[in-house]
Amino acid sequence: MNFRLGARLWWGVPILLVLLWAIGLLVVASFPGLTTPPSYVLWLQPLGRYARDIASMIALGSLVVGGLLTSSRRALQWAMGWSILWFAILAVLLMLTISDVQAVTPWEALGTAPSFLIDDYVGRVFLAQFIGIIVFALLLSGAGNRRVAWMAAIVGTAACVAPSFLGHGGMVGEHISATVSLGIHLGAVSLWVGGLAAVIALVLVQPELASSVLPRFSLLALWCVIIIAESGLLNASLRVGSVSLFVGTVYGSLIIVKAALLGWLIRLGWMQRRRAMPQAVSGSTSLLAKFAGREFVVMGAAIAISVVLSRIGPPSGTLASAAFSPLSIVALGLVIPALLAWSLPRPTWLSRLSEYPEVPAMALLVVVAEVAGLGLLNRFLGLEFGLALGSLVLVAVGWIAAACLFGTRGMIGIVILAIGWPAVIILTASLSATRASWQLNLVSIVLAEAALVAIALRQRSRTQDRELVHV
Image (cartoon, rainbow, N blue to C red; front, side, top):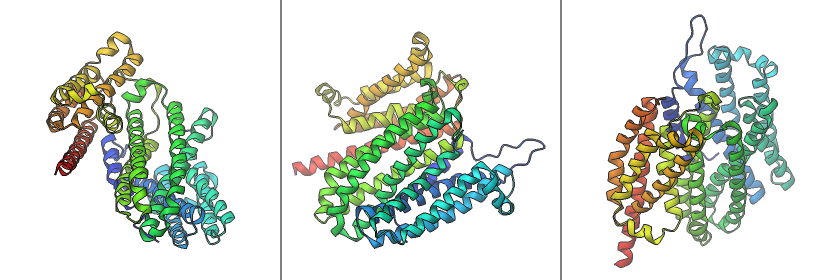
């Protein structure tokens, strides 16, 4: 078993804990006369879900890489080791789930586990996962045969998809479409994330396989990304039915952040295909490992957000707000615009404006205060249309500012935004009728500052590259 497979995926753990803390999901809600589970169950359970997802993805990805894309006994051994870990984590998660549902300690949950697995709907979903993992592990012993490998891949994918039936509503009534789309989404994510972890690890230890396995996995990853984007969009539209719920609630803003992270992953994957793959095929895997490391960090953050989304559940239509969530402001004003500025060519007029980055930087701060703080567009255009147009304005002005930040004098604009952003977020929070918690505001400020630091490092790297070219 190789514990270094996708090691940076675990960087999502602190992100998960910070989000849970900011949203207030690490505090036990106690009511007089009602028993509550131990407080440590509240943070161990989402950690268990995160660990289960990582283990299941790597087990499935190792099988696909070792049994379908190549004939690697080493990768199949990784799949067996991670499937055992997957089973063990799921057993612990079962105890934590029973503890949460029945308000008992995990040790007391051991006695009720058999009846819970048979009589309870949630327990039967767990039982299906246990059976799937066992069958998956048994098939791994014969996965050198391509037919058996296909069977193992189908069973493993089904086991990875099973947690979607634990969502809000399950396979009941109008929730069927949401559950099915979520299951497809989870299956594609598992193949993509786990497959990338396995293929990178395999190429690093056996560079001679790069020329055959990398193009094959690249095609698989492309299809996975298409399915993830389509199923994610469908699932989000089914669970969040209005613009106000997207930009005004924690659930909706986390979906926006997750979509932005998917965009960054697509960009990184494209750069890896264009720049790192040719070098890896020729024998140099350093750039491939570098890009993969960045992808794993972003993937870990996206998986952490998914765990949080499953924990808080979709918002009710009655919770529509005229205010922007601080997380959606960061996503719409900085994260998505930075991606657009990095990916798209700059128009000529924008190149000239980049000589004065302080102007678009100040403009972005003003737009955030006016659109998200005062809500001017909402007053004249109505709630939904005003928020929709305001979101587009944030992205557009943010793109202009981000494009100028990547210029030769971009550091001036970065400093202005780094100093002004906390003040604008605090001002926006004070003007909002539905105020976010100080923890959520703090997390959004830290996220914005991290994005600005990343832009500064990128801008510095490009400046050094230009200096080397002139030398």
